[in-house]
Image (cartoon, rainbow, N blue to C red; front, side, top):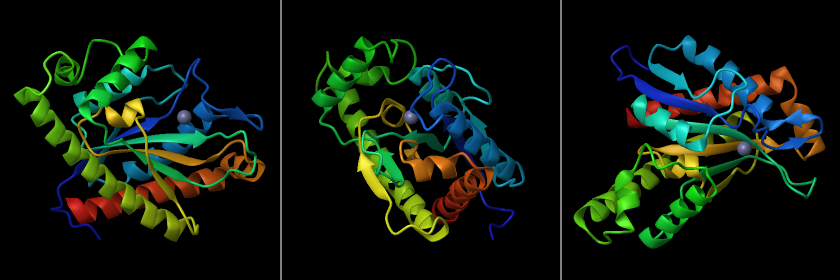
Length: 237
Ligand SMILES: [Zn+2]
């Protein structure tokens, strides 16, 4: 039980994809819809909890650039960033939940990654983390070093957050294993706060797709995310 005096925690919930960005599509399902449905159920649970404040990147089927999502996290001064996704694989037997946190990349590689994203038109020049962009020009300057320290700090915190989710997932979703991975996903790598990207299941797996399309399972996933947030709050706030 969290006491009334507990510090409130601000979470930004990011239902992945939306609008013309469908995300994965399989078994008649569209990732953008599944992520929003789960998120809406999560909002209802969070509405009843005054110790956790939340905001969201979207409440309807709208298109958002990845940069808009991370900009929003900074505008809202969120303590945590949770991006909800559903997975896809060429192997229809691929299944299960995966939790991603940002990669620990040497700064050069990180710059390359940013550059790549910009070339793909996914990250614009405006907005966040100008010091990282500058760093490719002014390597090893003080800003760069401070940035590296901060980034390592957030990676550590993200790892703690992912561990809390893993534990709660195993318990409430009754699964033996949750895969934890690191990947340079833009949304989790570009925010200055603990952040995870949650792949709640595979739309390409017929059994998981069937589950993900039912309200009871969406509710179960939403509730597990909510409980994990409470666990993290009890631990860290
Ligand atoms: Zn996705």
